[in-house]
Amino acid sequence: MTLALVLNQPRNIPEVFVLKKLTIALSLSFVGSLAHADSPDIANWESVVEEARGQTVYFNAWGGAENINAYLEWVGEELRDCCEIELAHVKLDDTANAVAKVVAERAAGRDQGGSVDLIWINGENFASMKERGLLLEKGWAEKLPNWLFVDIANKPTVLTDFTIPVEGQAAPWGMAKLVFFYDSARLEEVSLPSSADELLDWAEANPGRFSYPSPPDFIGSSFLKQVLIETVGDPTVLQQPADEADFDTASAPLFDYLDRLHKVAWREGRAFPQNYPAMKQLLADGELEIIFAFNPSEASNAIANFELPDTVRSFTFEEGTLGNTHFVAIPYNASAKAGALVTANFLMSPEAQLRKQDPEVWGDPTVLGMDKLPETLQADFAALDLGIATLAPEELGPVLEEPHPSWMERVEEAWKRRYTVGN
Image (cartoon, rainbow, N blue to C red; front, side, top):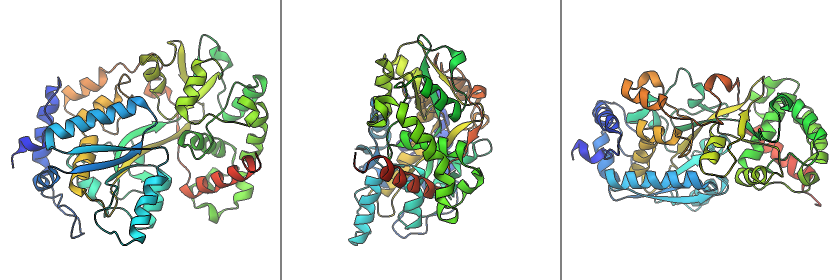
C-alpha cells in the first residue's frame, strides 16, 4: 500500500495534489480507533483505504437538483480514479426514506450488510438516528484526515445539528443559509421585505406572487422555521424539546401568520410548489416574484446554468435568517464502512470543497477554515467568482440557529392537519 493509492489524481489543481500528500501523511499519525469490532481502524488510514478498494458505496442523498447530481457524479469519478471505489447515488426525495430502511433492517436483525452506506442527513433525521443508536460510533468524523481543515472556531454549527451535539457521528459537508431571490427587472430593491412580517405585508399587497413548498419538503420546512423563530414570543424555548414547552401557545403566531399568507399566496394556498426547483421555475416564468433557497449561491448558480435571468438578485432579512451545517452520516450496519469513511473524507477535502463552492458547479459554501489552508489554496478559494447574484459574506446578516428537531416534527404534523385534511 502506498500513499499514491489514496491520492486523487490532480485535475488542474496541482497544489491540491501536494496538500493531499500532506493530509495523508498527517493522518498516519492520528491515534484512536473505533470501538466497534467490525469498524475500520481510522488510526491506520492506509488500511482503511486498502479495505475500501473495490467497495461500492451506496450514498443516499437528495436527488432533486441536476447540478448536485452532476457534482456527485464527479465525486464518483474521483473516488473511482483514486481508490477504486464505486459511488452509487441513491436519489432521495425525502431523507426519512433512508432512515426507514435502516430502522427496518435493525428490526429484522440485519446488523451487518445493510443497504445504506452513507446518508446526506439533516438535523431531524440525524437526531432520530442518533437517539436510536443507528449511527456509526462517536468520534469517527473528527478522526478523518481532512478534519484538520474544518473551521470549528468560526462555524460552530459544524459541531451541532439542530441543537444536537454531533460528537463526531457525522462529517460536515457544507454550510447553508436561507436567502431570498427576486428579479430586479420586475421588483425594485426598495420594495423588498426585511422581515417575515414585512414579507406578509408584501404578499398581501401583491396577491398570488409568493408561495413556499409544502412540508416535509426541506426548503418549505425551512421557511416555516424562519417564520416560527421570528414570531414566537420567546425564541429560547425553540432550543429545547417541544414537549417541554407549550407547543400550541408557542406556535399559534406561526399559524396565524400562515392563515393570512395562504389567503393571498400563489393559487390562494390551495396548492404549493413541489420543491425549490419548482419554485425557481415559477420565478423564471414570472408567476412568483420572491422565492428562497438554503444556499447563498443558488441564484448565481441558476443564472450560470441559464435557469434564471441575469437580473435576479439576492437579499436576506435584517435580523437574520436560518443557517446551519449539513452533514453525511454512516449507519451502524453499513456494508461498505471503509468506503463510506474514504468518501466522507474526500467530501471534506479542499479539492472537493473548492469545486463545490464554485457557483458554476454547485455554489455550496465551504466548511473549511481559510486560515487552515496553505496560501495557494486560500488564493484558489478567494479567486472563485461567486456570481453576480451572490451576497458577500458580510452581507448575509446574522445566522438564526435551528430549533430543536422536535419542533419541526410537531410543526409539520400541525401544518398537515390544518391545511391538507379535507382538501
